[in-house]
Amino acid sequence: MSIKIRMIGTGSAFAKKYFNNNALVTSGDYTLLIDFGITGPLSMYQMNMPLDRIDGVVVTHLHADHIGGLEELMLRLRFDYKKKPTLFIEEHLVQPLWDYSLRGGLEFGAGGTQKLDDFFHIIPLTARKPQEVAPGLRLEIWPTRHFPDMPSYAIILNDKLFYSGDTVFDPNLIGSALERGCDYILHECQLEGQGLFHATLAELLTLPEDVQRKVRLMHYGDHMEQYIGHTGLMTFLHQHETYEFPI
Ligand SMILES: O=c1ccn([C@@H]2O[C@H](COP(=O)(O)O)[C@@H](O)[C@H]2O)c(=O)[nH]1
Ligand SMILES: [Zn+2]
Ligand SMILES: [Zn+2]
Image (cartoon, rainbow, N blue to C red):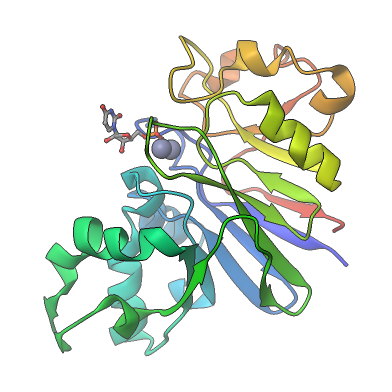
């Protein structure tokens, strides 16, 4: 059993060379989108990947580089493709996603007065409670520390792959993922500066070598190429590339 992850983008919020850090997970016939930021629709177009491939979407948090492409996705799926995908999102984020991020553009539309559940089958998630997505694909969300008081989540796939979402460097969180049995740690990485809201490369380099071997870096800035060869035993994920994980 394996899943494939194609990186729609690997860049940080304001990176211009790399699209927003979003990913497509494929397990069997099912395609799950992890986040869909402002640059998501253009990146999918460049990958020649029609939006109706998407069966489900899981959202880590409400920053625009993670949800800014949803309006276009929702409209295209509802009206062009007549498809209603599933939305997996932490239970307390359902209403804020609609009220603060999507409602202004979508409430009054071609379908009359519209609501979030006109576009998605909504599956509210509880942190640390496993949720089956499709046969052979299970996810769990774990809270992360990102902006103070802002709900933000990492994603665990099949107990084997940890996808950090946005978080400060949190060795305990990484330790929990390893204890759970995760063999793959896809982690955000801020290349330069202080890690106020993100994990810096300098911080990630303090991880022991056996952990670094499991780490793939994403959500990085435009100077990524300068850092190739300077990431210890960790390697960069690259936008539009597909990675296969036997999980
Ligand atoms: O003071 C602020 C408040 C909000 N932002 C927003 O955060 C994200 C940054 O994205 P990250 O991927 O978490 O870096 C972006 O949407 C900003 O509008 C901020 O940067 N500063
Ligand atoms: Zn981000
Ligand atoms: Zn963020």
